[in-house]
Image 1 (cartoon, rainbow, N blue to C red):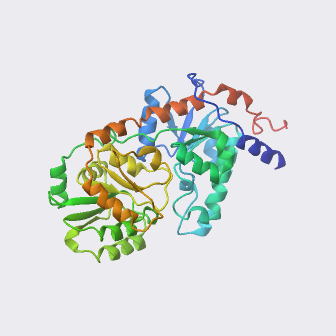
Image 2 (cartoon, rainbow, N blue to C red):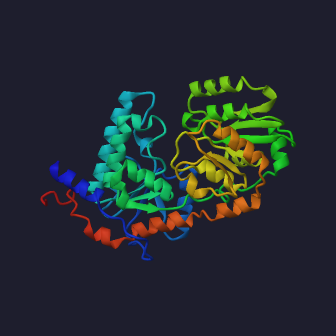
Image 3 (cartoon, one colour):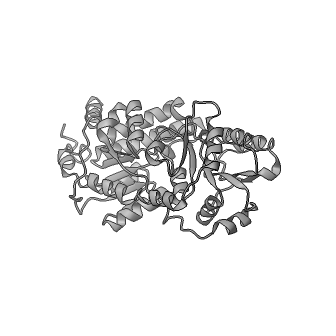
Length: 388
């Protein structure tokens, strides 16, 4: 155990190298966790395939890793909590956490190279208040060779919380959604299909509805807006109790000023709801990286969001309004400002196009081709148990 911990700590402080043009060994393979079913991964691995590396699906089990992965292969992890956290069952979470740690340690001991894309500082369900997340995060960081982070602001936040990530970080873009959610609806048909009048100013929230996204604050700030305006909230509620709470908040508003679509949105519906609104309002209580922000920009919709996390690296004066989340009434004022300001949809989309998927795909290729790190890997104790 002492030798194992010494090797973990050595990995934790290994410096990250800069991007190079060299490419991976043809024999090395990349396994993605999760592989598909999430827009971010679908776009990233499609771009990666166009550059010559095909990501492969894998199962999260020691038995599967033992049978299919070999030394030098790569494991790309995105959301670690997917593999252990059960919010409704503490015993199941603990059991899953033990399994998660066993699989990750087995992969590392087997000589598999581990990469992690840090989409958030902690899982939004429970966050840093749950020790299971802190344990899982520290293990992932210790065994990861590279940690991909969406921009310098997110990287600084991650390094403050987890200093061991500092020398492993590789800065990447969060790619745009322009090609993933192609336009099928014009503004007027989209509004008509949602029962929105052409002349009303529509504030919208689109995406998964969770407490950290601040829907209560959005509703309170909207209640202060005067004139002809409407609030659209569209997305799946993972918690029935939270859905009931939001419905209770909305009940205080005039019914004709509110449109609630509390369900999962398919890809074509996602685009329809975004183009129907005048401003996307994302009043996060906390955020490191936001795909919802990129969604708004990808369709030329100005965004209102707090000045936190990677948001500050993506937004500019042409893409929407930033506000101070700690200042009372700042969200309400920002919503007033976005309504009176003039934004050019074409300029917003042009800015979104600078956030390419080729950037993170090439960063992953460069990390995979780092022969220096591969050559420094210690002998595999699982293949050579007699060696120290």
